[in-house]
Every structure is written in C-alpha cells, then in structure tokens.
Length: 84
Image 1 (cartoon, one colour):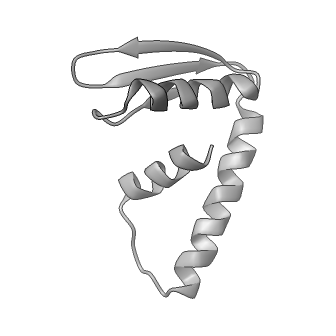
Image 2 (cartoon, helix red, strand yellow; image 1 turned 30 degrees about the vertical axis):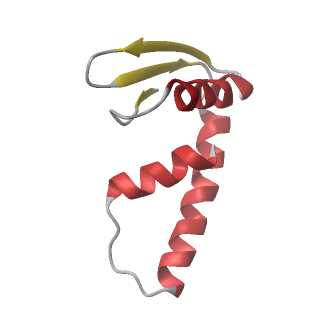
C-alpha cells in the first residue's frame, strides 16, 4: 500500500501514521521528499482495510443523514488519516 501524505505533514504526524500502520502488523518504509512524504506499507492489508471500511460506512451514514451529495476525496482521506 502506498500512502501519500499532505505536503505540510509534520514529523509527529508522519510518525503517528507509521505507528498506526505498524500496530496492525505492516512494515513501513518512509520516503521523505521535497514536496511530499510517501509511506510504503508492506504486509497483510486486510486488517487495515476493514478498519477503513468501517470509517467509510460511518461517513456514508453521516453524509446521507445530512443530505450531502458530494464531498471532496481529499477531505475524506484526511478524515481517515486522523482516525487510523
């Protein structure tokens, strides 16, 4: 799995995401560039995907209850990042 973080991600945020990925058994390689930081996560992604699916179901339930018709993908991904 490849995870591209926002350009303004702090070292603390990068470490937090890395720790969360490692907590579910994934090995993580961090590539920090001038513009972006990329995390490469290797291992059985099914546990993480199950957690993300639960977050997506909750977002969908909330969006339907608020009668939202669209939401930027970037905003949704930011919500996921903060939740994992």
